Amino acid sequence: MRFFIDTADLDQIEEAKDLGILDGVTTNPSLMAKSGITGAKNIEDHYKRICELVEGDVSAEVIATDVKGIISEGEYLAGLAPNIVVKVPMIKDGIKAISYFSEKGIKTNCTLVFSPGQAILAAKAGATYISPFIGRVDDINWDGIALIQDLAEIYAVQMFETEILAASIRNAKHIVDAARAGADIATCPLHTILGLFKHPLTDIGLEKFLADHAKANS
Ligand code: G3P
Picture 1 (cartoon, rainbow, N blue to C red):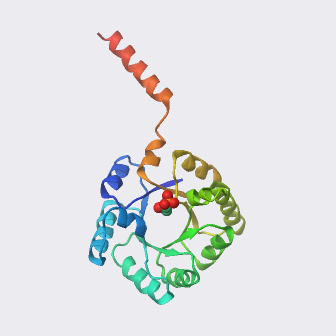
Picture 2: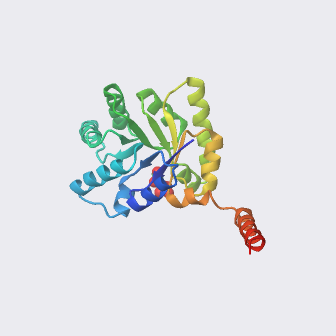
């Protein structure tokens, strides 16, 4: 499983990169706004900075919702850096645009996927990635991890090449469960990645090793 970080915050991207386990970045308009990045020029510069920082794929989301607008915005974003992936919403015009991008060899991430039917459409259109939002599925008392399992099964049976990028990950358990369910990638806020480290027995064990070493060497 690959790890992307789900943020537009450069310090957090840097911290995840320093761990040596970062494979890419996803952003969305909410995350850009949360980091205080507003205005076309600032947004463009920010994407360029992220792409310089990280070698892997960086998802940049379009704002347009009509096919012409998605295509022109997506081509512009794709031109900013070679590792930009155009993030397109799961709507009719989005699927048309993904088909177009796929023919042109432009990588895409189909976002706001909540059902197997939507995932099939995105794969048929040639999306590079789909982003099922598991936390938001859980929020409405459905099962986000069961959705990942369904998608992984369908994509395997049908031999679709689209990769499952589990998104809207809220805790470390989501990452582990998404890995078991067959997600190719998990895109996570930094705190959920750091949550994977935590185990009380590791802390207790390390404290004892260090204390024993100090006692034996004093
Ligand atoms: O990758 C999608 C993510 O940013 C949405 O997360 O927690 O707002 O559902 P959340």
